Length: 232
Image (cartoon, rainbow, N blue to C red; front, side, top):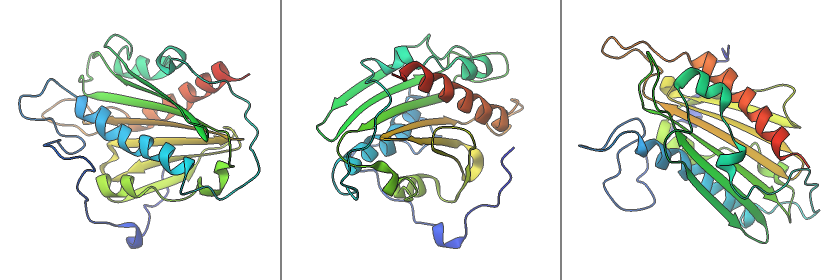
């Protein structure tokens, strides 16, 4: 169980407006009359898409070409099975996934967005986004520990702890309110990110809460499986 204290006051930030115009709901809220948890997939994906852009340009600290021990994923939603998470939230692959790839000279990125179909005691408002970034030009370790301002902008306070025995380095971030979990792994020139968001991490209207600790354990298990699948 993650029990480290939350980060200090210096990490607090004012909520920022989304990069793109429109009446998008805030993370954890549904648009009026909306079809369900799709806002989660947008919110979770924002930081991930931005990370690939930063990694390809502004954060090019290193010059040595990093070692890449993983293959490119042509369809990450096929490679990322989310078996452990599905055991908690219901099958994550029954609804149409959101699958993207970006082949840039600096970074090959693959992204998969999934949402659950529901299970007894768990609402259909649980979303997961997995992303793999293969850094072909610069070593991503230099910016691995850099704070993601989008995370703070959308969620406020957060706490981050190291996850042992996963890649070269790994960390789990739990945001304020425990409604957004982020697992990030560095292994050579590859950065794996797995994010999970839900509005059921806390009990609401008599609905039982989703066990945050169980979700974190499942995220780590599913991350290990994904890394094994993509290993060359």
